Image (cartoon, rainbow, N blue to C red; front, side, top):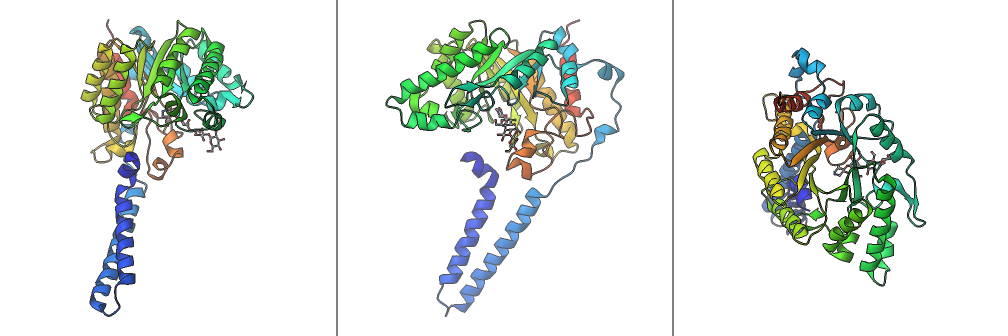
Amino acid sequence: MKIIWQLFGAHITLSLIILILFLAWLFWPRKYKFIRKGLIRSCGLVLLGSILLAFYTYWPREYHKRYLDDQLSAELKATLLKQLADSIDFHIGMATSPGSPYQDLIAQEFNSVVGENHFKPGKLLVDAANWEFNFTAADKLMDYAQANGQRMRGHTLVWGKFPGMTFPSQWIEVINSAEDPKETMQGLIKRYIETVMGHFKGRVSTWDVVNEPMGGESLYPSIFSNSMGEEYIDYAFKIANQVDPECSLFLNEQIGDYQGPQGKAFLDLLKRLVDRGVPIHGVGLQSHQINRIHDTDALRQYIRAIGQMGLKVEITELDARLLLFGGEDDPYQAQGDQFRKVVQVCLDDPVCTGVTLWGVTDGANWMDGVPPFKWKSPNAPNIWDEDMNKKPAYVGIWEALKGAQTD
Ligand code: G3I
């Protein structure tokens, strides 16, 4: 709700004003001609204003690519991100899909990968009514990662946000009609995690056991939280730990404002999980920068706070929308600086063991496919541009990793 208001607040307010003015004009007694004229004129003016605002907001912008004129240093061209990361035992990762046209590049530049979609329930549990799984595509990705010596982050086992992709839609009816929804949900979670983690046991070393549990300051209202409350998280981690005690188990979340109410509520949740002895080993901070540029000082403190609870951290889905930097003199450079800062903050704290990027090229990025982001361009949130030139964002990451070399 808050996000809808952030994105469309101005449009909603203007539409309401137009409606009120129009209705007032419609029902105002006809004898007050002067007032009625004023109302309809104001209505017209606000309408014009909102049309102009819509044009201003959604008109595609273009920013000058100054980086194309710059020469990348010979050292930068010769040394890959993966080489730099390997030498300091750090994970630099990329989200990908089986058969991606960028697989050779990803194999060269990254020592860790994650399936952007193919390890999610919607892709694996193809017939929920009959518990029928199809691991073909995910196995293909797994084989690719293993052949290239890359770590695979498993993403994700339990996620209650989008029925169909993040959990089978049929489960809604199963839970709604259950005599004991809690027990039924435990059965679903157990069977799902046992099958999927069991299938990848020994090959996937890190799993996002639960993804995006928060809905603002409280738990996101899903079939999981509605039937089990917060305990669904404990339960999922407990089962995951039983299936593969060697696996690193992560709770993955997108926080927009680390010092805001959601950030604080998530820390409180982590503290409760740790206090209850839940077998959680790490926290994934997604770090999509979609509606705001993240405060990296706040991120630094946040990572420290998580580390003090005895948990590891990874930046798991880093990208940053170019539009956010539109007010800067050189938006591409400002975007690059932000990538460098985020990676630097992670490198500076020993509990933060890796950074994964959520897309290779601006030419194929998830934001261009999802409303309302697809209506505002350029999103261009990745480190290679649509012509596969290395952007300042690539250089920023490279420089942070280079600066962390010990010899
Ligand atoms: O492949 C089908 C295509 O055949 C069909 O025509 C089209 C019609 O909608 O859908 C395509 O599937 C889409 C898929 O992305 C591949 O593009 C799904 O509808 C769409 O739901 C799916 O969105 C993914 C989203 O998670 C939901 O699972 C995005 O690719 C993926 O980038 C995004 O990743 C999430 C992380 O898992 C969690 N954190 C946030 C992050 C970004 O939203």
